[in-house]
Image (cartoon, rainbow, N blue to C red; front, top):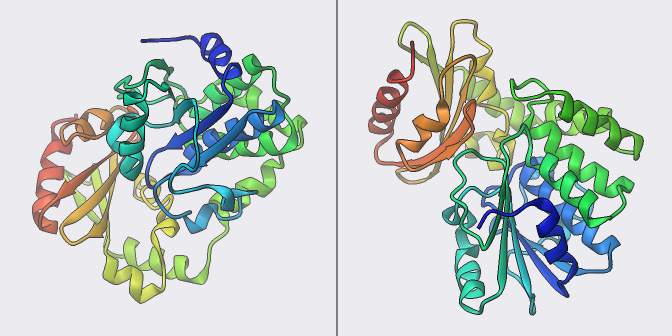
Length: 322
């Protein structure tokens, strides 16, 4: 059922132990949502643990206490909260734990900001906004937890990440007001901007050069795509976390309306990231292949030979270009 954040806050306050799950291959908003809630619960004296099925990406390894994140839940919990996760499949290896929890009649909560969210929990709060950390900030207020420096830093990471450093078209007064509040609480905007958008290793710089040199254009240069192969990553000494933000580069080309990143996850399996500039609905494009996200940022998985994947993706994109 749909629930308000006030109702969810009241349910959380009754919990003795909480498990917080987020989606596989997590980004800054996923970790920001999960870790800020965890910090708030710790301030309230509520035992909790954050779980994500995948390894910590290198670009987010700098986050305070991120090493405490687990791949599986440990011990008992009486409330399960999923954050920044649009459907159950995105839980990856944690899906079984979610299903076991529901069979045990453990209450589940879903707090998200993706328009494609499937409202899969007992209590669902879905509000489309620039960052799910904007939803988490409101929840923390209803919980009555303090916005200390650590909590504010986690929220800022999510806000910066999913707003594209305040550049996306869904950024408005609320996002800037929250950023000001977090800065007042001690979060260093300059530091986190550098960590998230500027800092890079020599390996990432080499990978970026290799990938962008192979950029391809379609439909009178209105669609641009890049491919990130495992072979190229190994050659550069890079890993998956270093590709964060790559998809935004093709979108900077003035003629491009839709940009795509095709990242090889394993043999014949590709993670697709989509971005659009003005009018194309990439949530609908991703939905063609069972994915989703936002109107201007979405993703999905595709399988098959690379050129076949490119053909299928290109055709889908063509249906949403004016």
